[in-house]
Length: 265
Image (cartoon, rainbow, N blue to C red):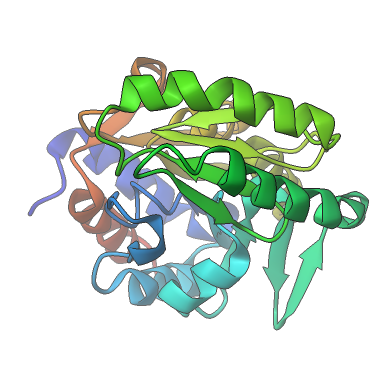
């Protein structure tokens, strides 16, 4: 599939400034198709290799996701690519894992919250509680009556988060997530890397409301390209904020390949 003509100028412009530019990608819904069972999510074929090629050309390449870093590493195996998990709570730096020091104390509360959610929502068939180590998500994609399940689950999730002293509940595409009580999001990650690497340009990619902070984080750069990966569940605010829209992970991969070709070795 050929990259849409409307993005050609931006691709060439970012490639020309690759030594001063960064690329930031979401995982689920962007590099990987959304699947009913979150544990079975896989990046599209060749995604890891494309990210590695980009990392050899551009000043910074990062996958910024709500998934744990361990999950991302097993599915991408990229070298020289930053893996940032749990919306910025943890990051793989070389072979070491860096975790925000203020969240370590929340691990026990997260463990309790996961156990309580599994017990209190056991009557809702199809719900999947994902323990991410330092966060816990409740997925509804396999539930038949999603509206009824959400109505049943939301007050339970909010109550447990409050009682365990954790952050307020974050809502995404058929998912609710409880995180440690820290003020960090994907946009904070992008801003930090921009400052660290002195970036003049960046491309950010996302498919859900949790990616909107990354779209705002590139405001003010010499060149900012915001790409939304569309689906039937796309949040209208994300589409409205995007400079370009692609039809799915395969089309995104074509765009990323074109960024490799547009840069100089």
